[in-house]
Amino acid sequence: MLIVMRADATDEQIERACAAVRDAGLAPHPIPGKSRVAIGITGNTGPVDPGMFSGLPGVVEVIRVTRPFKLTNREMKPDDTIVRVGNVEVGGPEIVVIAGPCSVETRDQTIHAAQSARRLGAHVLRGGAFKPRTSPYAFQGLGPEALRILDEAREATGLPVVSEVVSTDDVPLMERHVDVLQIGARNMQNYALLKRVGASRKPVLLKRGMSATLEEFLLAAEYVITHGNRNVILCERGIRAFSDYSRFTLDISIVPELKRITHLPVIVDPSHAAGKRDLVIPLARAAIAAGADGVMVEIHDDPKRALSDAAQALTVPMFAEMMEELKIIVPAVRRGRTVTA
Image 1 (tube, rainbow, N blue to C red):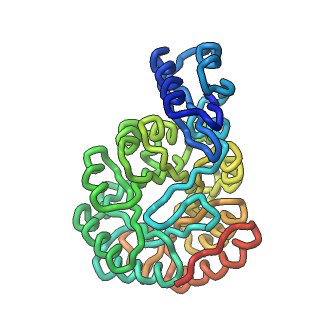
Image 2: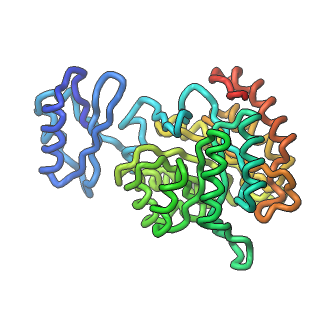
Image 3: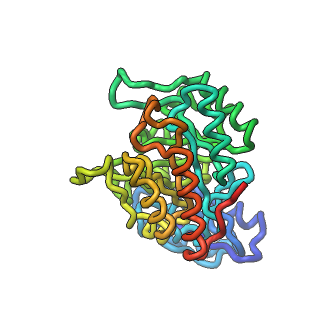
């Protein structure tokens, strides 16, 4: 349910409406808009009588929200949410590019990748410090040492950093070192972790689970938002299908559908979807053409020697090629331009 306040509603009237929601045993979520404040209501297990709130001072109307995901729904917040990461706006007019190595392997490798990403126009640096791997014998990341290297890369380039958090225990450490907390596909339904990052002040980049429906994806985002963190970026990264020529199948059709029904920014990770570097650039082009707010790709100086996801990492010249091609597509979809050094 959504309480729509008058454009001239006072802070006192807004708080009175929130208090009425709390008195009913429900949770109010004030949502500022361009011209007025709306108050989302969650916590009900059955129908709620709109008359409980419609007569309150400053209330214009009370609207039933029909979908199970409430706070991510455009019915709740018609305006696009813009997530600010340092000086970067994700979900605004400009397309955002996130680039960097899958894993932080060495200082030199990471710093060089960050410098290349910055020089060629990337907005945000990605790099894995903790790596959840299918095999227990695979490289699991450098952990705290990688976070110190990412700090140095940020200092050297000015790029904000996104890195995956894999455990609730690691959140405080990650918060001290990264600008965006990434929830990977394997943890999309790790509800304890979703609640914990929901209590954080850091933006959250939420990847879609490899078998998750659109509704499950948005309900995972709902966990984060209901615990107080509205700065959520959705990331499509490919789903499991019967394809035998790519690592996953990039569900490109979910991009415009998400943009239609949710106010959250949507980006695409073509690297994990493809599993092959030759497919990454075409899929990145398709993502922007479909309406994504940005892309996240892996780059490496020498992909053949990468300790994780070697087959899908772009070389630096390939990343430069991708950036040039995106500059052609961005104006065609009436968006801002990618930033160049």
